[in-house]
Length: 271
Image 1 (tube, rainbow, N blue to C red):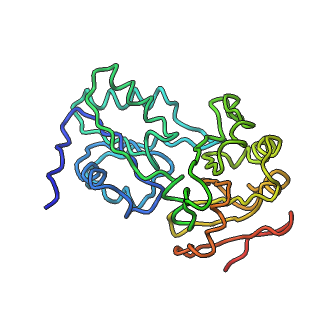
Image 2 (tube, rainbow, N blue to C red; image 1 turned 180 degrees about the horizontal axis):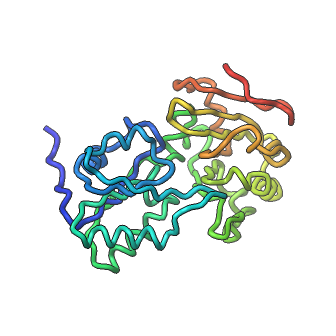
């Protein structure tokens, strides 16, 4: 028999990862939170099917952040969570992927801690692992790599993060997984190539990972430098660079749209 789940108490906040999209990837604790929450503060990347698991009386508050679009300020989101908890509500903060992997969950948890609000962290399946698995790409394989690096491609300034040693990353990490990097992919590819990565190194871009709308573009690092990939695929996109991409033809269990770019003018095709 499975162990009894903890109580979702009034006046507390649960910061919950909703995973990359497929509702089946929710944890039992995430499901418990959905069924118990009186208020759900959710992100843009949360699958709408998951929100259908909330109780009918739950108040839903959108707090999504999408590049180039009007978005809630992080400080306002944290204040909202604190105020709702102080009103005695059971507050679910629902975030795509995992709240502690480029999800600002750490910032929100710190704000709650400083305000004296009790909270629980419920990890979720991050897109850099689960999303790539749905594309048939393992982030590690003993024949290719014993190291993988997760990097954000979008800094707080909105530009390519200047705190990343891209040259060093190019030299020591055989597999690189990029979050929120589609806009800046040409510049990132250029930095990695300048650091020694091959122009021919395989790259996969996975959009809407683990959902019925999943799309995959398979290309090379050189083409990412010279081709505007946002003309071919739209966010949310997770990107993986490395030889693990070559496992996809054999491991593509979740059949989706795919493009293999053979020239700079290639377009998405159905297979």
